[in-house]
Image: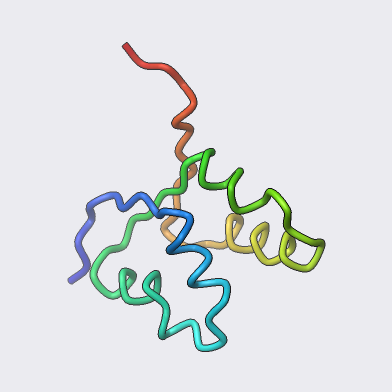
Length: 80
């Protein structure tokens, strides 16, 4: 049974997933075998999208909009 802890995905995890031809060999894929809830901060999203070409941007837009157990986390908000 997968753990329901929220895992914040770092840029390096996402880039590894993008670059692997066999997605099942990526770190993100291995995390999905243990966890079932993921998040990406706006900072990570910005890092991913800066400098992307049209094809790469389509991949990331599809990833973000996919039905994965994925949450958009806005870490830019100040909380006190």
